[in-house]
Length: 425
Image (tube, rainbow, N blue to C red; front, side, top):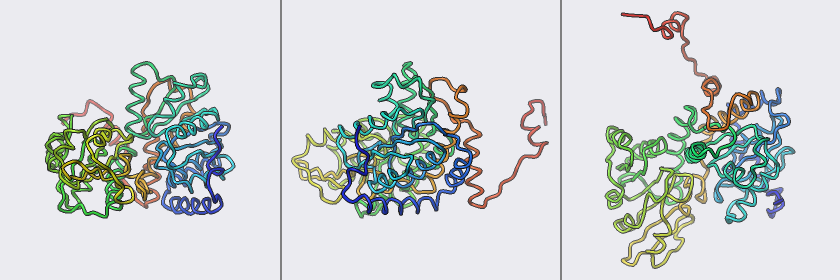
């Protein structure tokens, strides 16, 4: 089995201290997980379970990981992106008596999948995934483990798409909660988290302003909405590209210019892809882009910007700034790609991921969904399931309590009225 992260760093003590400091700061601002942590520690709902995780291993994820461990589980974790792991946080997690971390930043594909195999080697009974790689590998390489797996949770839009495709093909053999699709995740993490984190990391990586620039947002799902909204809020001119007529119309009605990508390519200064699909920006788009444009991807996998085609077009390429690679074209134009085309808010050199408060909500849903799988294992057949709405509301109520916010409650008469069909004028 692959060694844990602690055996692979030069100064594990210093790394552990640094990681714990980052985690302590995150915990101060994650009241949902802190509340669940206390409840889980008392009730031990995951006693005897083995949780296998493939996530972006940074401070906020670490708070979720420790919460699951405090609930009684043995946890094994690795990264879901070669550039999103914070090694010091990984080492700090590995020091927990119930957690083994294999996540390491900057590994190649072989080491990435070796670490995933190491997690699978713990024979998880629950999986918690970000992008679907862990679930897919278990089905492809370790189908013998499926009968012992209670179920799992998937965090991302991309991962849920993969799981639904598996389910449609009859290839998904255990229940998975689509955590991405809950209101507490989709409305906050995807919109505010992706919007704020993507733009802040683009800004920190390039030291460029959005004001007065044309920002092209590819895709107007929840993530694209967030990026467009935050870019407009920083006085950028926003252009949206879409393939869905309803989303394109929505973007238009929100006041954004809507164009096909090849037309937008000639106008844009900064491009952010948020589609979850491949080949969103390709050769014909590179051919009409202006000198010095910046390309960033906010989708899970590094397939949205076709870097193979860009590399074929370029005479040379060089790192012109930490995290920025400039492709020099024969006519002298330079096209700048951030974070190797990977998830910009997590894979750029100084990336911190989504804001802490936003991830507290998403990971709170993850935690209660894992608890639900263990407490009601017979309620879910193989396939993709929505997280029960009462669990999503539970997380929202904890957040409101933490913020000191009170809301109204329906009276008995109002509840009766809303539940009746025979009330007239």
